[in-house]
Image: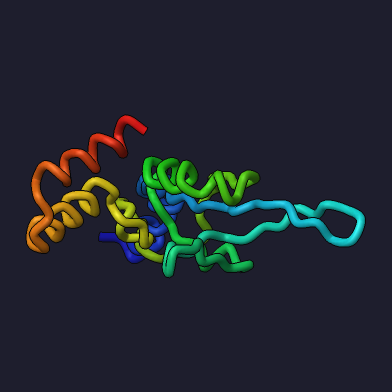
Length: 138
C-alpha cells in the first residue's frame, strides 16, 4: 500500500462519483392581480397539510421526491397552482416516494376507511352502494 492510497482513492471517487437517483421538487406557480397588472408568484411545495399546500420561498426547504411522486403531486396541485413545474431538488432531506409522505391522503384508502366507518355507524350496504354508484356515475 502506497502512502498516497487515500489520496488516490479520493481522486478516483471524485472522477467517478457513485450513481445517485435524482430528487425532484415542485415549484408552485400562480398569478395574482396587483393593482393594474398580473404578477406570477412562486413558492416551493413543502407538504400538504390542513387542506392546503404548504410552501416556502426557500428551495432547500422543498420536499424532495422521486420523479413518479413529483408527477402525482403536480397533477393534484395544478388546478390551484396552474404555473407549477417539476425541478431538481436542492434539499438534502430523504427523498419521499409516496403521497402520504408529503401529506396527501391515499384516495382509495380514504374511501375504504369511510365505508368501514359508515358500516360501523349502521348505514345500510344498499345506501353505501347507491352513494358510491352515484359518485362514480356523476
